Length: 384
Ligand code: NDP
Ligand code: MG
Image (cartoon, rainbow, N blue to C red; front, side, top):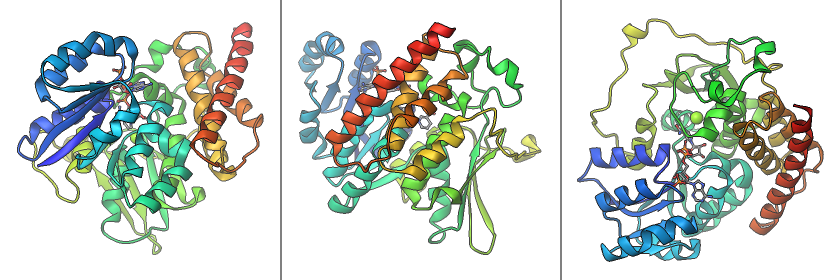
């Protein structure tokens, strides 16, 4: 029985992780659940899965749930420090907190030498150097959950280091929209993704192609290839989740339904594969698969991510922080769609790519980049 901690249990990935666990009750059990603001769902999950410990980061949620869950026999904590103790007995930590809030707990688990099934790409983007350091020092391991990186991970098990990675992108809801229409996009348009149903932040990132940019950085961090060996290919059907190309030019692809439960399940069961009741791929029904170059000029966020990883140091963290601020402002209707990438670009231009010294240094950079991005959003907002 693998004992699992789910961080971000109430989110899209967290909920699907619990579905995978339910699918295999004799193989996996939940020992830790962590949630933030969704008290109702966290209560339901805790009473159903009966973990030993429940972590609640938002104070109001903690106050609401702690008495009841303690009464039901669970340990309930609100401080990330207490997480260490609760994680000491788990076999695998699933990291599905959204955004930079996932950095601290992910590093904590890696510093304990844990195996982390990681969905939270922002940790790899912003704190990739610290993650690499922790992996080397404490002997933990990351199993990617992000579907593209899970695909590459699955391909790689065939053979060592590829010459290139072909990272597929659905292209988001606006892949065919002309540039003039992109200027008019509002949150409602951007929140309807054609192939994946995900949390709000990543859905907006998919629409700007920032998600694909973050995934390029994520791939560099996970698989140790230079950024120019990672090629983004638009593939509308989201059937090929990514590919690796070997030195002889041969390409290997991983295909599946657009269902996050598959990469989650693989990250939980690796190196084994498990039978399940999820729908399978019907290639005859799909018939045709399309591949195309991304529209670089219309979706500038993608280029920014390449620039950030090429500059290295703190730059990916600056990009990530600025993007989180700009996306939140866009969702609040205080910033236009095309301005998201502008804010990220201008924030990056205000920083030098210094080396990341420590987690404390990274938090300072994160704060400073957020402040700069806020200021730029206010200026852009005045122009709206
Ligand atoms: P959601 O927004 O659906 O869920 C986010 C989770 O994180 C929730 O459980 C939320 O708790 C918790 N959370 C949010 N803020 C904080 C905080 N400050 N401190 C502690 N916990 C917090 O996101 P997704 O599940 O869509 O995405 C999670 C991660 O997985 C992201 O990094 C995303 O990029 C990545 N990912 C997601 C995919 C998807 O299909 N959804 C695909 C590939 C990667 P609460 O709801 O209780 O407030
Ligand atoms: Mg992905």
